[in-house]
Length: 272
Image 1: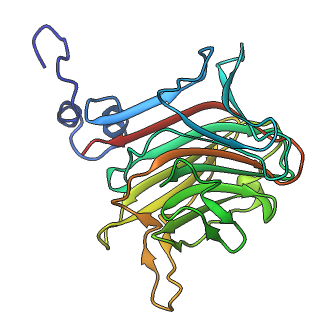
Image 2 (image 1 turned 135 degrees about the horizontal axis):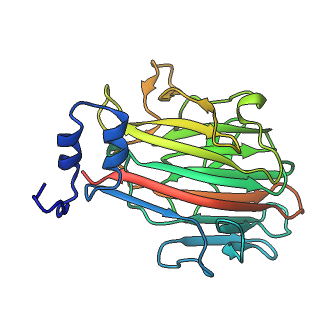
């Protein structure tokens, strides 16, 4: 660092020199260096940044993603409209890969936890009507994705679901005390990705949930894929070399309007 104390080149190498060896302080500070892509939207502006978000809707009255005016700390809202299976989806761009350790965190609340489907995480398309097609089975619209999903056509609990080149990973099905959503109550859902240590071009996913106070109530292991041909499970829940987008999605499961309110979305990954 120069003698005048000005940090001219804020790179991860500077952080590593200050904090040698792997530790949480080094990892935390690295997020804010030039070597990381990192952003957060608190929705405190009066309009959505259209250059950041790509949105999709269907159904009567659906609104993809709007800012709720004059809300404490700022809030965005996604409105699935009033039609059965009406939906609203929002993504950014296909700029993320599992081998660069991307992470998404979304603090949200649902207007109701009946007759609703919601997805938060990473997927390989900006235009799908949900990355997960049927949660109970599960089957997928996406080819590669890792998302938290609640779908009351199955249960009223969040589940961690991944798909690797069309093959579903072991579902994470926490208990109601760990991930039971409550209507109009904020909670934070986190999906973290990394490349497998055992298999090339395979990514693994971790699912974390925080309650309204920010306390961790659930953290999964790194999830593996279960092939359908009888072979042994493969470490990974999505391809590590496929471009992904951050993803937020809400859908009605009856002709009753469901809303997804978002306090913030934060996303970060290594550049190389």
